[in-house]
Length: 262
Image (cartoon, rainbow, N blue to C red; front, side, top):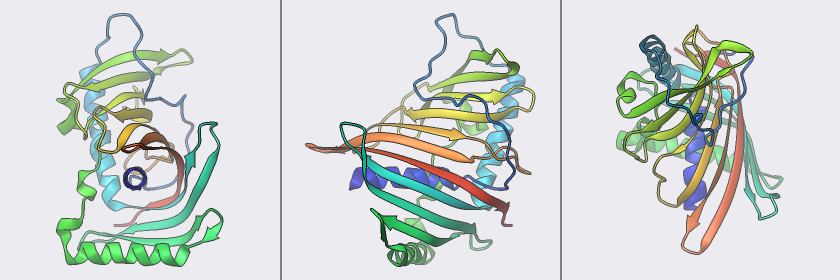
């Protein structure tokens, strides 16, 4: 349960990055297991890194100001790859002004086909009441940051891994932390060199949190917004557990109906 809870919380953190809607075409999605070519690393230009830092800053703003609808599913996976113990949720998340908080409206929540919407909404209300009563219990500020954020760049090593042969402006940048940490990720991202924004990225933790053996996350930045491209889809595949109890989970989420709430 601790492992699944950690995965679900991580999924919620990523989902909270959505904002204003508007579809765009996405490139081939970056994966966490993609690695640079064997040739000597190619440095990323200062201009591109500066532009991506701005996108990273806008991304942080999206987390605070974005209202969105999320449709997600998480399931346990057996040794044959079959899913079970499925949980599906449809919710609307809306940030508030002062005090800064988030209101979650659970539209539908199902566990293996059983409707548990009422229970899920009650728990969401209880969590919000707890945050408002004791702000120290709010851990949303501890979420993962894009490695391209200006405050994060010094922690990482970046290199150009490849260029899209069909569009030279699209490049895949590999990144890895100089020192592994639970709040540092490793992987790669497809970016637009002209617009200097992230198109998609795949990553895993550079140091796995407790109860997690491995997790891979993929995010597609498929929404065009006033603050830049924002996530439209995310997925994860994770393994972990406690002592001799090992679990394998996978999940997906789609973000839509996004807007700037304030």
